[in-house]
Amino acid sequence: MIRRLALAAALIAAGSPAFAGGPGAGGALYDRYCANCHGFDGFPNLPGTPDFTRGESLAKTDPELIHAIRFGVLSMPGFDQTIDKEGLIDVVFYIRTLQR
Ligand code: HEC
Image 1: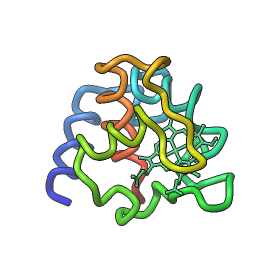
Image 2 (image 1 turned 90 degrees about the vertical axis):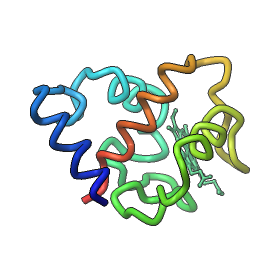
Image 3 (image 1 turned 180 degrees about the vertical axis):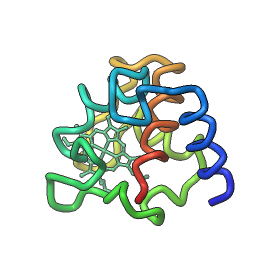
Image 4 (image 1 turned 90 degrees about the horizontal axis):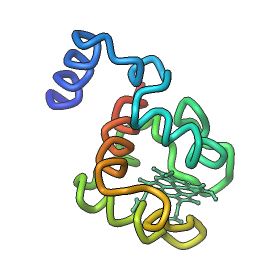
């Protein structure tokens, strides 16, 4: 939680557009590849999809989440061929800002 607050504060201080769901690196990737199922604001469109507005969906570590995004989980496709390593880090950074 403290980490998330620090993250949010850093994003606000930097005036990052990602925080506002704008064209920041992670936000742009998310809007393009993830929002169809996970929702633009992190509230899922597809049944059975984790709700990123709730912290417990993202209780795993960054490496665990990155692994899931790279290789997919059950009905979720993997993005290993689509998003590079830096992009995966950016997108995890971004989804952690969606919690309300
Ligand atoms: C086709 C729909 C779909 C798309 C597109 C999609 N997801 Fe998912 N995602 C899911 C579903 C469904 C689950 C739940 C899988 C399960 O555990 O049954 C999931 C799970 C997750 C999880 C939780 C994994 C875990 O181990 O708990 C993360 C993180 C995630 N998605 C991130 C992303 C990101 C980031 C993108 C875009 C790069 C993305 N997803 C694109 C449907 C999708």
